[in-house]
Length: 229
Image (cartoon, rainbow, N blue to C red; front, side, top):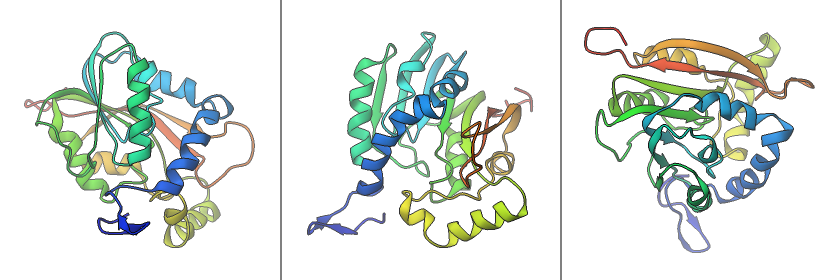
């Protein structure tokens, strides 16, 4: 939602999607087991260490799965209801987690301050993917990594046409700004990241193929000054 949109006679906070946030807060907990997201989150975060920035932390379901070698997590979440729930999740985490408001396109942190950036089902809903990934690169130290779990364009031609049609019509309004037909791997390459190990996933793994089923889990790197990792 844009700054200045009104709810109940008052101004709605930037990034607020109150109806979708309430739905997501309920559905995401069930998806941990029903869709296997808990297992995916474990793979996403395995082996991380040092300072980590999580962009679009939602209600904080990743927090409990950060390994002990992580010294600090700074979690950015623009949606007020989800941010309040993330603050509660942070209290139960085994590593220090600081939850703060902010947008992916203008991260409120210093440049080259983090060893890793975590993107978990967030690139689908940012307003400007290129700018958001430019910010992720800015805040990473040279050689730092992006861990990502994203959904996007996939399936055959009929499915891709369906994804694009939904993006042009009802889906973003219903799903908190989410888009179905973005290509996260192409966006990461365009932002100057080097792609590392990748794994394509279908969610749900068994069952009907839905427009949001086509996911990718992987690592990308910010090249260091010598052009390597």
